[in-house]
Amino acid sequence: MESNKTIRIFDGATAIITGGASGIGRALAKELAKRGCEVVLADLQIELAGEVVSEINASGGKAKAVKINVTDFSSMEQLVQETVKRTGRLDYIFNNAGIVIGGYVNQYGIEDWNQIVDVNLRGVINGIQATYKIMLRQGFGHIINTASMAGFMVGPGNVAYTTTKYAVVGLSKSLRAEAAQMGIRVSVLCPGVIRTPILEGGGKYGKMLIDIPPKELQRMLEKLRPMSPSLFAKKVLNSVAKNKAIIIVPSWWKLFWWINRLSPSLGILLAQKHFQYRQKKLSMTQKKLAI
Image 1 (cartoon, rainbow, N blue to C red):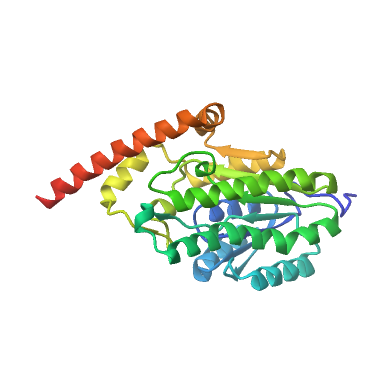
Image 2 (image 1 turned 60 degrees about the vertical axis):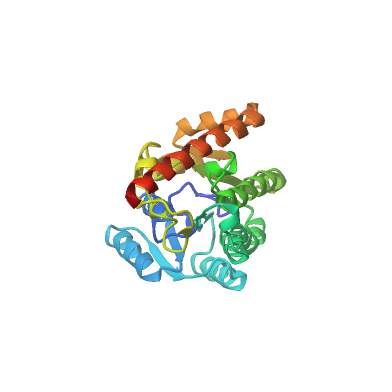
């Protein structure tokens, strides 16, 4: 008989996924359920989360939706405690909720900085703080924090988002080193471009401060070959099962990771040149639309 002191991969496990109603979170929830995991979808979009739960339960899986704001620690703590009380364990937490506020730094208000830091960084911290001691008492657990390739690269025109994702990468790597001796796993998930609502101007709770025509934004993103969320989830969970420290999907994005590791100065220069090129193209597009 399997020991209750051992993490389950993934059959019979329990997982909490923040931002589970749409995009990456939704895809992870559905794939986890297919692999036999009971999933809790934590999201402000409770109606949408409920739809996902209905799909999972109708197909024979086990899922529950909970309305939650990840910036509220007490709510996160209550969610975790209730989940453990109900299921008897917590194998995984996917700190996945995030937003994009795209724009130049001179366009940001302090409220924009506060919002993106609260969701993208404090939301992850709250998830860790609410689960880590419980996992220590269990003797097992896996924390997966969603960062981004923006956590390795230079991001002009997206400085606030890049700031939060660098922080999540640093947090995750440091915690992994600290937690390993206690039997707790920590991974950081760094997606490239995935076909999710966040591509459509920041998703429901984000925004785009730069005036980019939707068709132009879509054309730019299509050049980066967005991966389908379902394929993404399969690849990610295969890496989670192997306890990979840094999970980069699609794998071809590792090229940018290596460039910025081997030569940070080259990474800055390439980002600067590309940013100037994009500004020029955007200016030309805006002039055409104004005629």
